[in-house]
Image (cartoon, rainbow, N blue to C red; front, side, top):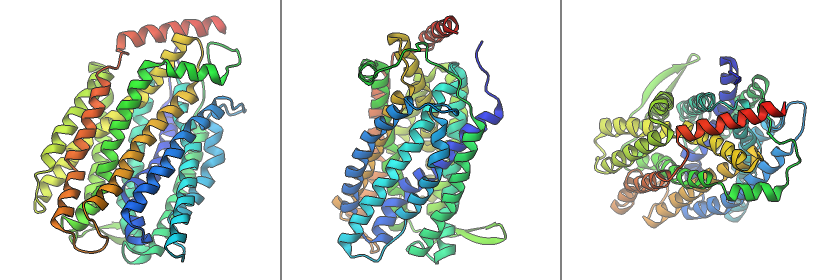
Length: 463
C-alpha cells in the first residue's frame, strides 16, 4: 500500500523551496545588476566570474549527493541538512551582498570568494532537499503532487522576494544603487529563509527505503548513473530550460532601466508603510505569479496528457511567444506585461514535471540495476540545472559587454537591441533545445506503472 502524504507535510516540503528560491531568484534577477551598478564591476568580469565559480559549484553538487546518500542519522539521510545548513546559508547570503571598501582588484577577489561560498552552501542544503522528494513517497502521482507543491512554494517565495526587494532596498537605502539598502534587505530575507528551512525539516518524513540492504559503492553508483538514459535526456532538457530562464531573468532589470522607461511607480501599503513598485518590479512579480499558475495547471494536464507531452507543449509555446516578444516597442507596456504572463505560465509548468521525472529516473535506475542512489541522481540533476544557469548567467554578462553596455549611462541603439534579443530570440533558441531533448525521453506512463509496481513488490518481499 502506497504512503499518502498529508497536506501539512506537502506544505512543509514546499517551505524548503520557498526559502531556496528567494535567494535563487534574487541572484537570477538582481545579482548581475548589483555587481555592475552597485558593487562596481564590469559586466564581462562578472560573466566570467559566474562561469568559473558555477562550473566548480556544479561539480560540487554530486559530491554533496554522494555524502548525503551515505548520511545516517535519526532524522534520515537528507532532512538533517535542512537543520544544519540554514544559518550558514543566510549568513553567507548576506556577505555576498555586502560591498567592502576595497579597490577594484580587492572587490573582484571578495566577489569570487563570497559568491563561491554562497553557491557551495546552496548546494549543501538544496541537493539534500531536492533528494528528499525521492524518499517521501514511492507513488509517482504523489511525487508529481509534491513537486507541484514544491514549485508553488518556490514561485511563491520568488514572488515575495521580487515584490519586496526593490521597495525594501529603497526603504532602507533610498535607491537601488544603495549599498546599505541591499545589505539590510538581504538580512531580512536571511531570517525568513532560516525559519522556512527549519519548518521544512520539522514537517517532512523520509519513507522510501532501498530494495537492497547491501552497502553500495560509489563506483557502481556512478556506473548506474552513466547508464541511465532517461537521466541523460533530462540533463539536456534541464540545461536548455535553465538557459531560457536565466537569460530572460538576467536581462529583465536592464530591459526596463535602459530600454523601457522605468519612471512609473505603483504604490502599495505593507505593514503601515507605503512602498513604490516600478515597471521592473511589476514585470517580475507578474512573472512569478504566472509561474505559480503554470505549476498549478501542470499536474492535471500531465495526468491527462503525460509529463512528456505537457513538457513539449509548454516549451514550444514559450519559444513562439518569446519570438513575438522581440517585436514589442518600448511603448507597448501592456503587451510586454501580457506576454510576460503567458511565457511565465509555460515556463512555470515545466519545473514540477522535470523534478518529478528525475525521481522517476531514480526509480528506473533502481529497477534496472537493483541499487538506489537518490542523492546522486538528484545532485547530478541539480548539477545540470547549475550548468544551465551557469551558461545563461555567463552569457548575460558577456552579451551585455558584446553589445556595448555601460552601467548608469544612456545606452546605444546597438546595446538596446541586444537587451531586446536577450529577452526574446536568444531564450527561444534555448527553449527549442530543451524541447528537442525531451522528444527522446523514453519513460511513458505505462512504463512507469510497471516499474513502480515491480519495485513495490520487491520492497514488500524485503520487509
